[in-house]
Image (cartoon, rainbow, N blue to C red; front, side, top):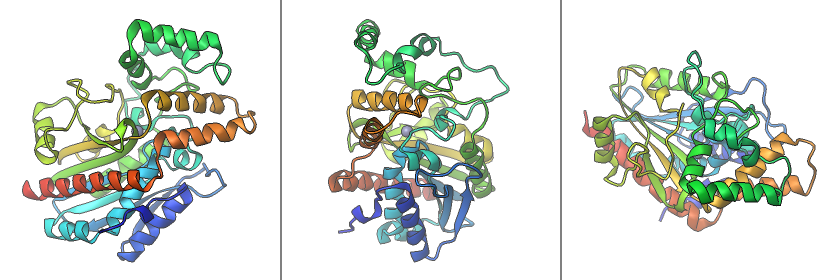
Length: 364
Ligand SMILES: [Zn+2]
């Protein structure tokens, strides 16, 4: 049986090395986009690395991307490396006549620094909006910002009570929606959308334009972690509110594809999410996308890790052991390095890729 565990890495540098080695093993060329200014936690160079496998002139292209949310990249990178080592998948790819673009570490800064956001505290999956239009308001977040990101960590008793009172009054789903929808007002807050396209967003757009150019069909599997049951891969429809697109996505991946539009997804409805990049960069193509979202810890654990991480970002002078504790808390909230979790997540990513290849080739 194919063993995926060796594909997973312990840090960003190792993840990138493994991706490069796995591509070299298959004699695939690496297209490297080096970050112009930001560096990794150990001073290392940061890059978005792209490998295209299969029939490069195909009518159908599947994009599989990792680390849109930095620290979530442990899982997606492991799956990408495992795919490159998986003879069954590569044989299916050859039979399908489809091209696959693996986009490694969309947000390499967050991956290296164990943050969900990029070098400017921007949540990339809220950063794909029209910056000429007025920012979408999030008055609920504005009213709760000082509570969500407290001035002290651990939070004071008053802070915990204030957050508890919100949950008692509105419920946990409302809290999640208020925080995770995205906001443009507080650069030192959670799920900050930014005020201009981030470097990663620009590169991702270029990658889609270059490799999606001329294709009739484009599929996208964007691998995330942090929501849902432990090691379960929720297939969240990743596109506009369009019934025929949702129906096609379910035809490819099964009736258990969830969407934020009908409340079946564990994700809240977002503004500025990245699916627009595929639609904008490849307007000629029929687009079918999912986020593959793997569960790690409880929603409360993940939320507390994010609050602590934001507090740390806002207090760069904070010393050890607090710094190390929060970094480890973040890693645990978005990744589980047990062989069981790795095997379960890769098995589901593998199925999704095989389904997408089938969808992309059957349509032709
Ligand atoms: Zn994510």
